[in-house]
Each structure stands twice: as C-alpha cells, then as structure tokens.
Amino acid sequence: MTKREIAACIDHTFLKAAGDPDAVERLCAEAKKYHFACAMVNPAEVKRAAELLDGSGVRVGTVVGFPLGQNTVKVKCFEAVEAVQDGATDIDYVLNIRDLRTKPSDAVLEDLTLLNLAPKKVSDEVVTKLIIECCYLTDDEKVLACRLAKKAGFDFVKTSTGFGTGGATVADVALMRKTVGKTMGVKAAGGIRTLDDALKMLAAGANRLGCSAGVEIVEKLKS
Image 1 (tube, rainbow, N blue to C red):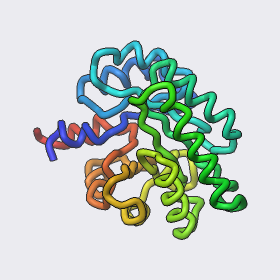
Image 2: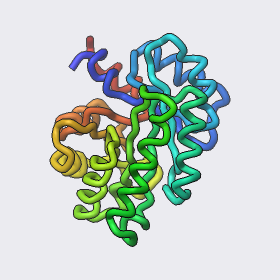
Image 3: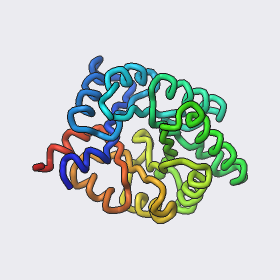
Image 4: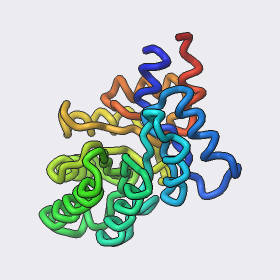
C-alpha cells in the first residue's frame, strides 16, 4: 500500500481525558497533511476540530456514550445530534453490553435503530459506527452485536474503544467481517501502533483503522 492509500483508511485519534493543550490542533494539522479519513476527538472538541478542518476534505468524528456505553438511548441520541450540529460527520457509539446480554434482541434492535437514525436526520452525510467492545464479549455475542448493528442500519461495526481490557485482534476483525459481509464497514481500533499491526487488520477484513499512531504508521511506508 502507498502512504496515501493507508492514510485513507485511518481515523486519526485523540480521545484522552488529558494531554497537551495543543493536541487537537496538532491532530487536525496532521490529518490534513497526511489526508487521513477522519480526525476523531471527544465531543467537547468537535466544534474546534470542525473549524480547523473546514474545507480540507478530512471528516470530523466523535464518540458517543464513551467509553462504557451505559448512557440511556435518549442521552446518546442527544449527544450524537449535538455533535453533528457542531460539525461531526462520523459518530462512533459504544454499545450497551448489558442490554445486549439481558434484553430481547428485538428491543436491542429497536434501540440501535433509534441511535443510527438520530444523527442522520440532521445530516445525510453522517457515518455511524457501533463499538461492540470485543474484549468483553463471547464470539456468539460478537456475532449477535454485528448482526443487530447491520439490521439497524449502522455503516460500520468497530472492535474496541481502546479503554477496555483489550483492543483489536485479527481474529475479531475476521469474525466481524465474516458476519457482516462485504457491504458493511469494519473498523479495527485499540492497540494498533505499528505498520505491521495495521496491515494485519486490513488483511483480516478491516477497512477503517482507529489509532493515535497514524503518523508513525504512514511514515513507515516509502511512498
């Protein structure tokens, strides 16, 4: 892959609670320089990121219900809508795992459908991703979560928040791709720090990578 090709697969990410005061400015500058697919920031930083990336072609992403997924559906919908109004184009929701395990599948599907539609009613440019946090799920639960996300209309399923007990694995990405088929996106995130990590995830079936090491990964390629 070329630098441009792999950069186009990367959501360049800064989701820490603390850090350098200039972190968002630096993230957006790097996203423009390398033509990353998206700059992922926390909800409070969306408006600033949208201003910095205006006219660049780089999308602005944020996370909702992050990192535990335990907010109510109503709160998640509000958070997503506000983010889109502030300039976000990509919304990465965290799945409520306890709901997945305790509620009837039809009820979970109803909730996920509401989540998927809420930001898309504000803008038809929105891409939605459901973070299923694979490290806490059995393979059967991963398959169920992916199937429900696809039925609900999500554009992507995503492996991890990066704040759980584990990040993306090749096995999880392959299982997710097998479950959702070729028409839905699969985003690998969490622990992707090297070019080798990135290439393995792409080979397993991911078509988007969430990582904070995007610059280091791209720079390992010669052209």
